[in-house]
Image (cartoon, rainbow, N blue to C red; front, side, top):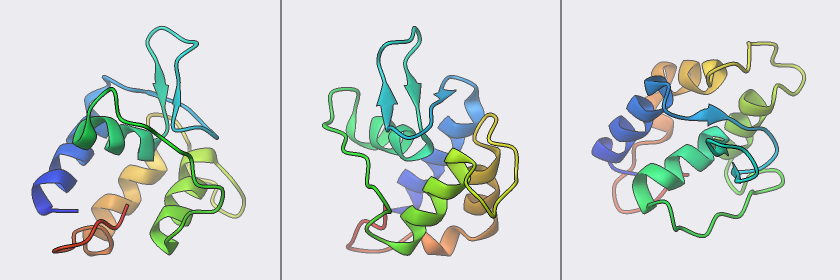
Length: 105
């Protein structure tokens, strides 16, 4: 993703506009809808009508780590409230996600 997309994603995760979901990119049965951290990325970068498919284990190592942090799976015990684990990773290692010419997540 580009640096601009990364910034939009991180800002959206911190905004409080999204309610965290687990084990699915988006859950429309709630009002407001719930999104996992990757679902927030898809929504922010590709729009509300984008087709979202939740990767079981992630196609890339970065996805797997984000899924683990978002869903609160062992061994990560960071709080999975308000995307705390995902925000921690994104702020700690933005170079894992910002690329040129390809999409990392």
